[in-house]
Amino acid sequence: MRVHSVELMLDAANEDAVRAEWRALADAGLPNAGTNPSESNRPHVTLAASADPLEDAVPALRDAVTEVPLTLTLGGPLLFGRGDRGFVLARHVVVTSALLRLHHRVLDALGAHRVLQHSAVDDWTPHVTLARRMPAERLPEALALVATAPLEATAASARLWNSETRTITELG
Image 1 (cartoon, rainbow, N blue to C red):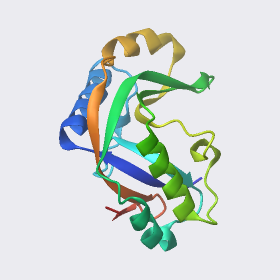
Image 2 (cartoon, helix red, strand yellow; image 1 turned 60 degrees about the vertical axis):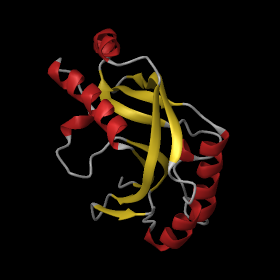
Image 3 (cartoon, one colour; image 1 turned 180 degrees about the horizontal axis):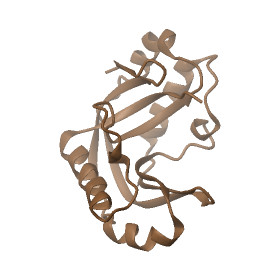
Image 4 (cartoon, helix red, strand yellow; image 1 turned 90 degrees about the horizontal axis):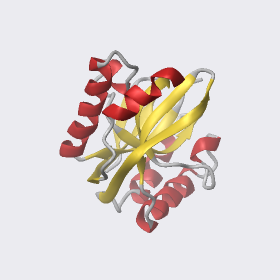
């Protein structure tokens, strides 16, 4: 399934910090989110995801993200999944009222577009992905390589990612 998403992009210093975690995992021979060589593959926080193309919502999305830049705190490691296909290893993004307000505004801007369940109001867990398909037996090694201290960051901009056309639309 093709997924289209509205994403918050990190400031340069924290993008570099997350990329350093990707490299540490790679250097240990572990799965990591840095293996995709595409220029568009950058650390981000997904605000909403949909199976539908979202370009017709761009004007409303631009209005929705006027609070960006936004202060974020990247917390400790977080795991998603049951392990049968490996885990997703991520850095948790601490939920604040400003982040929740932004999430709601983006969902409102998408209107009739169907968002995927993991980005719905009551199911969304903000995070920055470090690795996908992490085998359970390698989790202790991976967790030892990931920083646990919070990182104060800034969501410097927002973008729309169209996975069908592999294009980015800057939102603000």
